[in-house]
Length: 456
Image 1 (cartoon, rainbow, N blue to C red):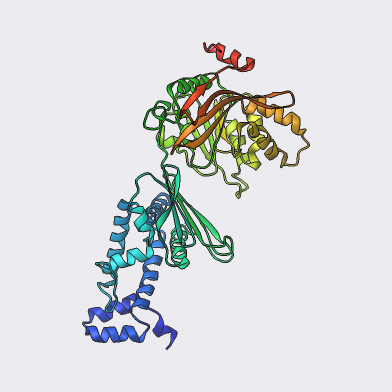
Image 2 (cartoon, rainbow, N blue to C red; image 1 turned 90 degrees about the vertical axis):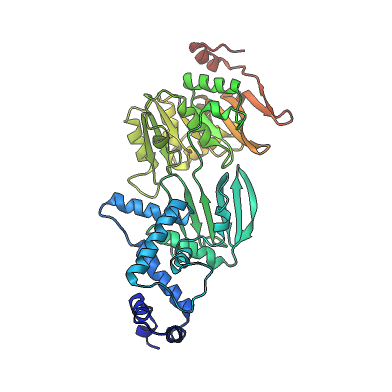
């Protein structure tokens, strides 16, 4: 059979149907060239290519169209209806209304094609219940979900790893990206902060797909202290307000999904709208400009793979934009030194997060990142400097009894050659409540006294 004959042509197939050929003749022709399933697969590729072609006269129109496709793939109902309509219109243009011999569980050919080029296979069943759904994790054929911070194995699973790979290829195609033997990973980021991370065979032992839905909204400290959340209590809320007013530099630690971003946004919500806040993120996730449109906020999205838009360049520009506070989503190796310098040169009241096991470990963890740039620094002096000026107040987040809580608030300092933490608040798991000490060290007491807070 020649290549010309084996290649599927939508126009030729449509013409054969429109010319009124008998269904038996159409079926025989389909069988001759590989069967209805092969014709369907080729038509699916035609529709996939049609959808992935850029649309719109302007960059903004093309960006919105790409966002439409991404959201449709990730299960957003409104966008799915729009894409289904686009597929149906395309079939009308091609004059293809049916495919003889094709057996599918779908009511129309458009729906069958939608399931192939947009649908998420068995993940559709997972997405049917979006209540508190924060993340979907796929490893090979296994599926896990995160709801309310709790990871569970899904009762559903893929039949084959190639089903996962098909979903990966749909996502990368609609983003002009690729996963192949030369590049075995890809990321997709939606405007609302939802994110998809994918890896392929060779980079990971099994293909993976992680869908993290944007669930963070504009919380207030009052909301987080309500019975619905119990992330903190009313006394802690007032303590944190005092910390903000006294302009302590804050560091927050805790495992992924423990509520660090919720807390940072809640703290920012309490600040005066006119305060100049500069945020730096590797990916836009906090979306402060969207949730707090009246605040004086400049948001940077840095890319370490782009020499012109790395964190060091973002910091340089940020420091020239008269920030009152700097909010750094997470300190990483390349930007640790710049953040330390910013906190020690007048930008008080700044906030960041760090991966560390305990608050006592935070200054040394930041020091280790600072030392990676090869500068000749005394590590002990650097740790002291970080403890005294960069991580003045530390907050630890944890999951406790199925909810996110502030587990510990403490004042960090350097004393007798090591990092010390004076606890202000600790969560007592046995009592399911917080224990307050709030005995401030002299340095913190002076600053709090200036705003009318007395220490015990």
